Length: 103
Image (cartoon, rainbow, N blue to C red; front, top):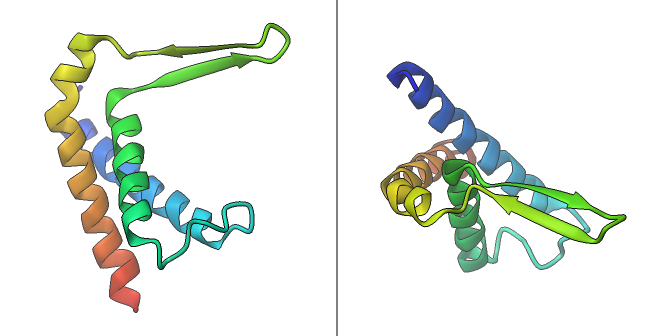
């Protein structure tokens, strides 16, 4: 991937992750995720950045009752560890400037 596209992809994934986590905090479907559950929110952020970085995808067939998860080879995970950290760092930067900056 071209460097400019990679940077835009990392930033936009960070923005999307922060937005989704903020929606989860306000959703009545997830009463255990609030602005006060700091540690849980941090873990959710780490998982979100990992999913964005590793390119994990899945498909669920309800008729067959099967869930297929792809993109999780050892080589892919090992190679993506640094990219996962950078994605999480960008996500934390977006959260700190966009969400905590408003408080």
